[in-house]
Amino acid sequence: MRLRFKMSSNRKTTFGLRLGQLADLFAVAVKDQVSSDSERVEENPAKMLRDELAEIMPGSSLLFPAVSEISENRQDSMTTLAGKSLQQVLFSPDSSIEQLKLIKEAGKHLTTTSVSEAERAVANTIYHAAIARCLILHNKKITKHSFQKLDESFALLMEKDWMAGELIELFSDARRICQTMWSN
Amino acid sequence: MIAMKADKYTSIGGGQRTFGATHWTVIESIASKDCTGSRALVGDFLKAYWKPVYCYLRHKGYNSEKAKDLTQGFFHEVVLGRELIQRADRTKGRFRTLLLRALDRYLVSIHRKETAQKRIPENRIISLEDSTFGELPEEADNLNSDEVFHYTWVCELLDRMLDEVETECRQSGMAVHWDMFSDRILRPILASAEPLPLEELCRKYCINGRTRASGMIFAVKRRFQAAAKRLLRESVASEQEIDEEMLELMKFLAKGR
Image (cartoon, rainbow over the protein chains, first blue to last red):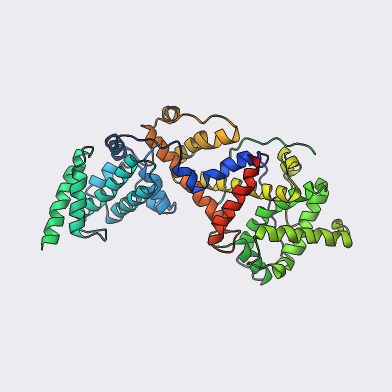
C-alpha cells in the first residue's frame, strides 16, 4: 500500500511549547477545570433575557452555539435561525414546528451547560417559551411533560420578577390551552 | 542540538475527521488487507504518529536525514508491512506504547541487518518536506526519548484539537466566540501573558455583559472538550480508556509544572 501526504508547511503549532504550557492547554479540555473557572460571573437574568431575545443570531447569542452543538454543525439547521432574533422566531406566525423544536432542544442543552444561575434561568425560559409557542401556534405539544406539569412550569416562570412582559403573555396563553387539555 | 523557537499558535483550520474509527481499527484494516475504503484513515493515522516517531529518533541521536529514513522504513515495514498488528493486543496497554516498543524492536533489527537507507522504498510513503520538523525544541533537552515521543504526540493532538475547534467555530457562525476564547484562554497560555479581563473583551467585541462573554467562551471550551474526547477515542480500544488516557496525559504534562 502506498500512501502519500504532505504536511502543511505554514501551519503554526504547539510543538516547541514548554511542558507546563501544554499542561495548561490540555487542562482546558478537562471538564472539571471548567466548573471552577474564574469566569463564572452572576448577572441579572432580566437583562440577559432581554439581550438574548433581541440578539440577531449568531451574533453573541448564547443559544446559537447550543443550536450548532445539538445539530452537529448542520448548516440547514443553523441557517433556519441565522439572521433572526429569538424574539422573531418565537413570535413569528410563520415559525415551523421544527424551528421551535430546535429552539427547545437548544434551550434544554444550554440548561445543562450554563456558566451561571442567570444563564440557566434564561435557558430554562427559552426551553419553555418554545414549548408554549408551539402549543399556541401549532396546537402541538413538543415535550413528554404532561399538560398539568407544563401548566405548573409556565405559572412558576410567570411569577419571576425578571420575566419579560411578552413572555408572561405567551405563558399565560399557553396555560389556558394546558388547562383545557388536562381538565378534559 | 539546535533549539527551535515555538511559533505563536494561529491555526489556519483543519479538516473534519471521520468519527468511529480508531487507530486499532486502522491497523486491523491494514492487516486484513481491506484498505479500499480507508486510505484517508490510514493517512490520518500516519500523520498522527510520524512526527512523534521522528522526534523520538532525533532524541536518540540520529541526524535529521537518518531519522527521516528510519521513520519511513518503520512505517513502511512494520506498520504498513503488517508486522505491527501481528503483535498488537488491545488488552495490553496503549497504542502509543505498542508503537514505541515496536519502534525499538525495529531499530534493533536495523542495526543487526543492514542500513536503513537500503530498506527505504523508492516511492516514499510520507513527504518529509517541512523544514520546521528538522530540529527538536528546547524542551526536549529536559526529556528522555520516550518522553519526547509522548511530548510530540501530545503536541500533534493539541494542534488537531485547536484546528478542528477553530474550523467548527468559524463554519458555524461562531468566529467571535473563537476569537474571544483565543484572547482569553489561548494567548495567555501560549504567550505566558495575563488573560484579557472580561470587561475588556466585552468592549473589544461589543458584547453586552460579562456573563454573555463568559458563556460564549465556555461554548468554545465545550467544543474543545468534545474534540479532545473525539480525538483520544481514536487511540484507545474502548470508551472507558478515554478518561484513563486523559489522566495519564495530565500526569505526564504535570512534570513540567
